[in-house]
Image (cartoon, rainbow, N blue to C red; front, side):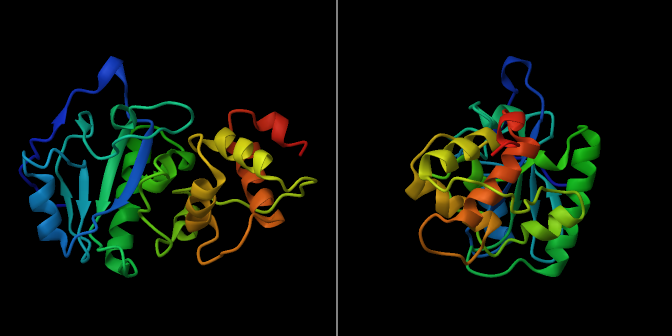
Length: 228
C-alpha cells in the first residue's frame, strides 16, 4: 500500500460514532488517477478512505478514524449519516466493465484488515446502491459479491422456503435486513444487482426466498422471519 497525501475532504465522526459498516463504490471515472484527483480536490467535497486502482495499488486517502465524504444521503439498518459510521472504499472502474483480478485481490486483503481492525462481521460490508438505491447503482452487477462471501468478506443468501410472494412482504424483509424504505420499483433492481445479477422481470418467489434468508440471519427481526 502506498503512502499518499490525505484528501482534505473529511471531518470528525459525529456523536462519537465509530466504523460499523464498509461501503464499496466504483469511481465511475476513466481511471484511478482521475478518481484520485477528484477525491483529493477540495472543490469536489467528496472523498473516500481508500482508493484501489485497476492494478491493485491501494491508497489511503483519509484516516479510517475520520469521517470521509463518500456515502451521501441514504441509510442502512434504519439509520442515516452513513458517513459517520462507515469506511468507504472506491474501486477504480468506469462502471461498464468487470473488476480486474489484481484489484479484487487487493480489495479482499483490505477488507480482511478492516474487518479485523474494527471487529466487524461480513454483514457490515455493503454496496453504495444498498444504502442509497434511489440514486446509486454502484458497485453494480459486474461486482462479484459471491466471491467475497465465500471468503467471509460479505454475506450471500440461500433461498428459503416462503409461503408468500407479495411486494409488501418483500419490502418488509428487505428493510429488516437493512435496506432503506423505498418503492419496489427502486429496491428490487438494487437487490437483484447484488444478489441476482442479470435477472429481470417481476418479483418472484426466488426474490422472496433470498431476502427471507437474509432477514432471518442478519435482520433486525430475524426471529420473526425464520417462521416465514
